[in-house]
Length: 74
Image (cartoon, rainbow, N blue to C red; front, side):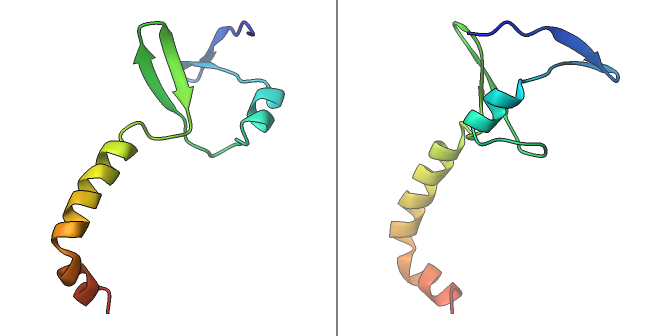
């Protein structure tokens, strides 16, 4: 665990992540992080938490409209 200070960044507040942390997570400038509020605090992740929900919806539609999607792919 590492303590990070909240600092002023322009008109907002921000946290600077150490280069070592970014390298370990394979992240860099321009990458997107998602902040998720949990019971234990704030969780930062490069993965979109809504992506699984969207993929499940796509899977159900993909099976139902398989032939239409095949035609659209031509």
